Amino acid sequence: MTGNLDFAGALARVRPHAWRTPIVPLDLPDAPPAFMKLESLQHTGSFKVRGAANRLHKLSAGARKAGVITASSGNHGRAVAVVAARLDVSATICVPDWVDPSKLRGIRATGARVVMAGPSYDEAEERAAAMAESAGMSLVHAFDDRDVIEGQGTLGVELARQVPDVEEVILPLSGGGLAAGVGLALRDRDIRLVAVSARRACVMFRSLEQGGPIELPDEETIASALSGGIGLENRLTFALCRSVISEHVVVDEGDIRAAVARAFHEHRLVVEGGGAVGLAALWSGHYRPKGPVAVIASGGNVDRSLLKNLVSGG
Image 1 (cartoon, helix red, strand yellow):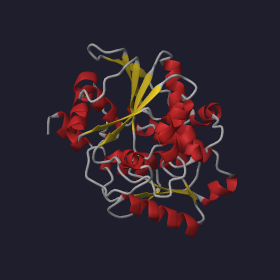
Image 2 (tube, rainbow, N blue to C red):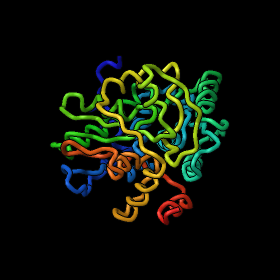
Image 3 (cartoon, one colour):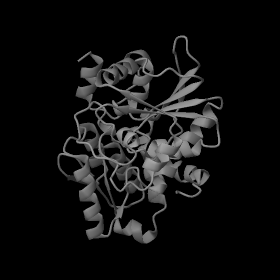
Image 4 (tube, rainbow, N blue to C red):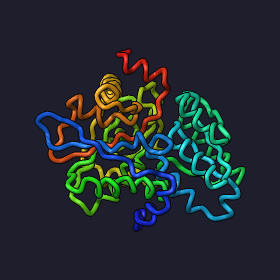
């Protein structure tokens, strides 16, 4: 469906914009060795910069001149805006009204144009698609795009080099770009991919259960980075997630809140709700690894007032 993805080339394109994030041990009593890959410390605060950098570097000179547009709940938009500014490409970012304030500030700090598109993520996607068509801009989809998937897969390549004995990878599941990319990058290795959804942001999980893309209303969640639909006309990630994911886990709001607080108190890490669902699956006991495991802490962009509330037990 996607052909042969060039992860080596993607690493070269991504490297000027994305750091090789660290691996740190995670103490799980009576369990196999466990590690965290800290994309929460990534440039722009999440793994999303990988896909954005790969996609924008592949644009033609004419496409760069015309500019780019995307829809985002925050992290992807910030990544696109930062990379676009570095490449001297104009960027327009369509966001839902509930976008995290810290992510919105990060986007605006780049000089990108921000469009508040309405109360749902799907409305932001519709606005971005319409504006791309009318203005001739390149649409940089947050997940359902070959180049974005290829860029996200560089995380899997790094992880396999850092922890060569890893047998399981736990990661968050939203639109499926990360799961698809990491799964494809690791498909020649005997590694189980465990995808974790937030109960209030689980459109991909429910779609896979139903056998095809479905729509669900946006719900308020601490894991807002995972909110939004996958598109009824999903071209790539639905089929890829069905192929590469070995197991699914769903965690509740309380599990996620507890994981954010525990990451801060025990590891001095700032991890946003959407980035902490893998940790929530482990620490809540919803998932028990069967072999050496790496969990991806995928993002660390969280509003200070919300973080203060979470770590104080609010």
